[in-house]
Length: 288
Length: 267
Image 1: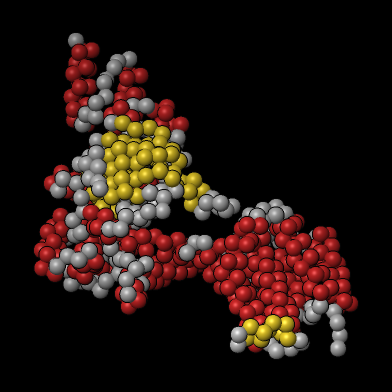
Image 2 (image 1 turned 180 degrees about the vertical axis):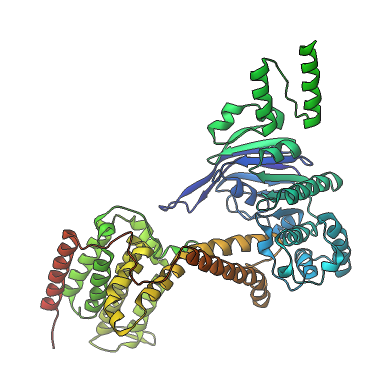
């Protein structure tokens, strides 16, 4: 499903001393099937932005279109439930939403609400468990007996079991150890391709944005600050610094390398090994 | 939900009322509430209304905001007015309409009681609108200090109060967050039969309790780690001090009270 924001403004508690403009005239186009990273400082409006994607928030002004669903000022689509079944949201610290007695029931909670049949739910559970890296032996345990990382996987499985077409990830790796972070992100990347998802990733990690996303949107104080391909965005070091963001380490490295050796290495989102090879060739050239 | 919560939400500011010592505010409001029940004629009511409006304007809290905060109470005020209108049968009969008879006493009584309600709510909400919860707790602790002599756990009480006040916004945020997460998983809090809606509260309450217990444990640990031992010999970051302006307010209020007692009708 294509996602379109047309001049969207969102104001919290309008006309009160606590009035806060969270989104200010945002226009976006996220084509179906793309992997988009939304980056910004705390309070830049990222979370408000994604709450428009499944109708949790409605724009104060402007219009949001997700596939055939349209959200405007005071008009929720009548089939809000269908929108929510097709847009899955993994919130920050999703393990906080677990409440059922067993892992099985918790994963089944979403699909059940959306009216999926018992047999279908059972087959979906068997499908999503290996995808998130959990074993079937855990199904009858209480989610509260699991480790933090496992709880998060259960929560993610609960969202995946609703079989969304668009998946929204709000800092899905926050608070995990480095290995867990990589596993979770690789899993979403894999699902993105195997299930033909449209993925919106909210992150603080420039590395993740560079590695996984094919489009980057940078927000600052509720406004769209920059957008484009990651390799074009992340070389604009000064512009990023201006809004308190860093560039990925690999870009930082290339910049210092270029300065030190007075050479040019074009950055095109190459992997570390490609970069190493490039550098090795250059150095060999210098040595000769 | 957020709109109703505005009642009594602190509005930052630097007005005279904001700067008053919270003890002054609590004392004055306490006696104001008592005196409201002594007023019984036009003069005494007008004095109190002028005092309340004066406090309201000098607090510099936007009027629209105060009125919005009063919305949940309008119903109560109107209801008591109507109740008196229909039930009280004093004075002369003014209107005879179908099966109802309205008496002048009923109308006056209705107006008087509504004004009382309005004054009480306005002045008490002014306290919370201009005083941070922390200030209120500090004031309560100071004012109850004499009770320490009879082994009343004043400090502990104040601590409990400030902790619970401190966690109201946190828990509200948490509720909002979890209800959004569950709504995204297809929980419908707004429509459907009552039974279904009550059932929909479980996915909200369980995570809320889990996180509240976790928070309590973490807070206890953090307090112990910093050597918290209760009130004995504990000094304060913000000392409360009675300034000239507080004394001024006390004197002004005593004058107001005197006017009310002088003008109210006796007998």
